[in-house]
Length: 303
Image: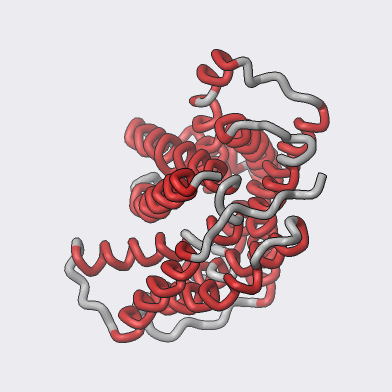
């Protein structure tokens, strides 16, 4: 891959990190009375439908049964992550889930070593540990002592984190076989479509689907914004980068999202930083700089 393509992938992931950071503020504008599983399913479905016209024009809807099974598996991983997150938030704080999520890029590195052998996993471990430590400091956000999450919350969200960590390496692995030559747009469409279907299925037992009646016009507009910028754009940028940059390095950009949220609080909302946040920002910056400078095309995936 030409260096320019690697540069474009990194620039795209910087935009990805900014969009993820902005999505937290946009999601807060939607009514909290709406079931989060339903809301996330609608986001994924709306985003997937936006890819239909270009895929039809390009003739990219042709897919084998093996391809459908592969996309269903990837969509299930997405659904498991979101379902576990919302279930865990019923039993612990967002700060605790944020700290646990900081481990996802490190787990992705582990899965990458298993599913994509031959990569430079050891060289990226230390920079990722630095960035993860910094993100954890930023996540505390000066909120003081936090009670430890319950074993149930850790177990439930741990399963979700494992699912999210396996998503990118498995995507790259499957692109060497049943999903060979699939474009980022096609990957995004099918994965989000299956993810939405699984989330809708998860809504059925608890009756969460009934909260759709509470959607207002304002909720719908924010949902459309989230579907377009926080879901469609971010998933496309993610799949665009995975084929150029090693998956664990791609997912590590979530640490920059944490940093962007903190910078917004400092410079836009005028909140004074505390020493731990300053140290966290420095660690995230150093870790991500080392990852970016040391990034290269992933090793070929064995067929």
